[in-house]
Amino acid sequence: MRRLSVLLTVLAVLGFVVACGSKLPGAWVVQLGPRISGVTAPTAANHDGDTFVFGVTVSGPAVVAWSWNFGGGADPNTSTAGSPSVTLVNPSTTEDVTYHGTVTVTDADGRSDTFEFDFVVGRRLNSAPVFVTVPAAITGNFSFSINDEDGDPVAITLAVTSGTGVTIAPTSIAATSANYGPFDVTVTSGNVENTDIVITITLNDGVNADVVTTVGGTIPGITLPQNSIVIVPSATTVNAGDTFLVTVYGGNLDFALGYLNTVDIAYSANVAPDTASWNLGAAGNAFDFKDGFWASVTDALLPPPTSLFFMTPGHVQVNVSLLGSPPTGAAAGTSGALFNVMFTANTAGAGTFDFVATGTNYFDPSGATHDFTNLVNATVTVN
Image (cartoon, rainbow, N blue to C red; front, side, top):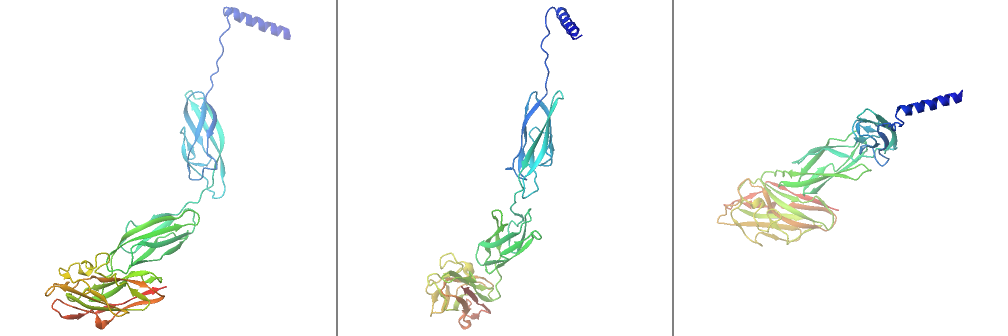
């Protein structure tokens, strides 16, 4: 029976050949769709929050459509792009996570291939704290706020890094996730003139590098008491061996000033003046440059030693005369720096600066004597 079947098959083939003119038909061709051989996927070196571009390697006909699913390991989690750019997702801060993804490619004839793959997203790295609100410029008290997406405690330090005579409070803050601000900062000027300052704020979460920003601005000077003379040191606390500037201001005088008859300041034994450093008006210019209190004076200033001299140890006495008969002087209501002198802190203790009331007064242009109503002394702590 088997031999009969084989014989019939052979006869059928021969009959087919005869029917074809003794020629066999051409080879049959099977058309295949696109085939995926691999994908480009992240590894543990790629972490939560990183941007990553997936890719797929395909052979065969041109692909016209893609369909990706990242199994929860990316945002967005699906895509129809050929090389989708996504943000990797791993909520763990301690473990790498493996995700299962799929990609399907389709050609113009509707033939498709699907490829499954696993990929790893590294643990979520700790993020540095950031400033949320910080003023662009300040003229006094201000506030700022921060954030740390990991909820870390953040040590905040604040310091005046440019500008003297201005203090801030607080200088340190222990921020926690329960309170990242806003934090209020009080800015206090001890200067009569306006002061340009820069405040540096540093954030440290104990994990990342410090985050630093600066806040700058101009802090208005203090208003002097009426008809006053005020001693203002450049620092209220210094170390032995340090030098510091002592500026004496006249404030809102009741009468025009034609002659600064005498200013007598008694200073303690643990500090000493630099007799070569005295300067009329504000610090920084030549000794007889008309600035500070003297900026509006049209009269010439008498040169030293008439203008300033040092008396017995423990006392600084100053006399400023204006050339003129009589001089025009400085108008009533004038305020500003009368003179300044550098001091050295020699030994620890309270460095005191006190006006001697009976030796501190001024003449108006007519020669009448007037006392300063308010004499404001100063103390510098020497460590």
